Amino acid sequence: LDVTSSRRKNRKAHFSAPSSVRRKIMSSALSKELRGKYNARSLPIRKDDEVRIVRGKYKGREGKVTQVYRKKWVIHVDRVQRDKSNGATAPIGVHPSKVVITTIKLDKDRRAILDRKDRKKN
Image 1 (spheres, one colour):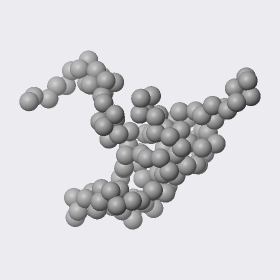
Image 2 (cartoon, one colour):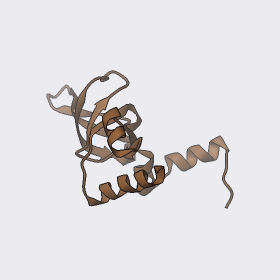
Image 3 (cartoon, rainbow, N blue to C red):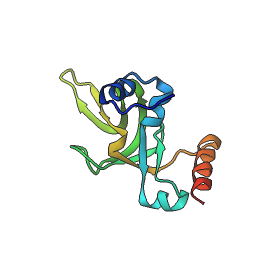
């Protein structure tokens, strides 16, 4: 199988990617401390990770990831929301490339990913 460098085909592949592929694309950088600790630069984002927003209007805000909305390519962070005219609050989507992970929600699968990344480096 050949790989294409056509902008048109790459955009099509990106925007029509299935959820399983979007998980990998929707990765976030790790904070300096975590980078040193786990010897990895980034990780696919997940619900219950804690993040700090580093770009845009909400830069500097920290919070827990409440939802990873793969269909819209965004994550929802708690307390990053706006009030609607009817009084309800709506979460504001943030692209995962614009946040850094400050606390990782670890389970055995996630630990295995980090171990694998660490082994690759050494």
